[in-house]
Image (cartoon, rainbow, N blue to C red; front, side, top):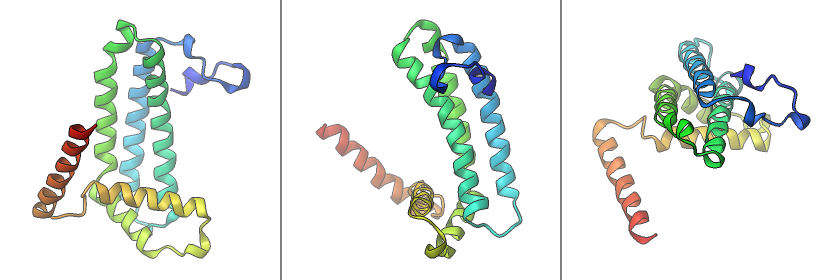
Length: 168
């Protein structure tokens, strides 16, 4: 993907008009594969989880992956030609694959460990917000729940979703 952004453009702007949907999709495929490999390495990390080797690593991987997806989404909104629309299912499938690996129990356990053992005096306000962001992401996924608790959780989530649709 980085090869798509190597062109020199004023103010480091993304050169939207210089690549095709297929080029973006192929680059995104490579990036998602790389991100999944990095997440699997994080799962295997034997070092005690801490803010830097867990939260910062997650943020680095996620920022890059979502940056490329957001480029696609931006192009999709301003250039809704048939060729851009055709790659939508592939992009969503790749993003879903990435998010399933991201939401693994092993990574969840590492994030929970960091959240329960961090020293607020050692983190900036922004670092603490980032830690809470990942903690909230993982707890809202219901990853740590047993099967009965997951059913209850997702039942409540569905009811909330139905209310939003009903009243908006």
